[in-house]
Length: 321
Image 1: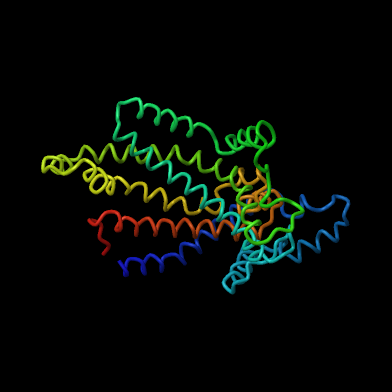
Image 2: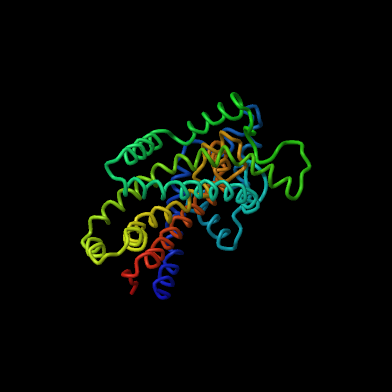
């Protein structure tokens, strides 16, 4: 296992290098540049030319890429053109809110999706299975942002009006300590619920399908024939093997925990990575876009590695050479 992990980690650097080249090319293929939309059209063309020269936007593309790469290898991700602060500092400020949102939403999905998926598989063909399947199909058909708008209408802007509609904390307050945590938790409920509930549907479907397949295996019939209790057969033998595809799903969800809520964060004005990505796209903020997309690529590779390691934890038959 240790040798496998070391080899995979050694592969990350060349893969990230290739990803950075691809990301750079895709970003530069988009029409316009950071100054085509940010600067007043009445500005002196000489000033515009000076700004483009300062950021090397008038240089050949290979030279631009080499300048970014050489700085990145030294730990300098550049300065945001839109916010005029170091990119690393800008991303660091947004990591906390995004991590809180992503972990809470993923916890909601796990705590509800896995038990309901198991229940649907065990009660296959009954009204329980039908109800769970109907809810799953409905959840898959409803985008997270639309469900978020419904929550806003029912629980904040109209209807009950019991939860804040946007932001990370209440504007104008000087809270600290526990009151600040509780205030942030109230603001977290709506966006986390919008993301978590819509993720439950897919997780329920994966767990149900995987468990139904495992329950048909011969070794489970043998276990029942030996007189093992159904609870032991289900939770000790069947569920462990059924969770293998779920481990893959959770590993690949790692980038989504930090940056997969672009639209939802924009709706709820949540100061996270997703909203930062959306702003950077609109403003053509090249340094921020490069850093964010490279971070997502790294998280995807890391999630794939963690999923492979999770296989061995879930299924003892898996061995890495």
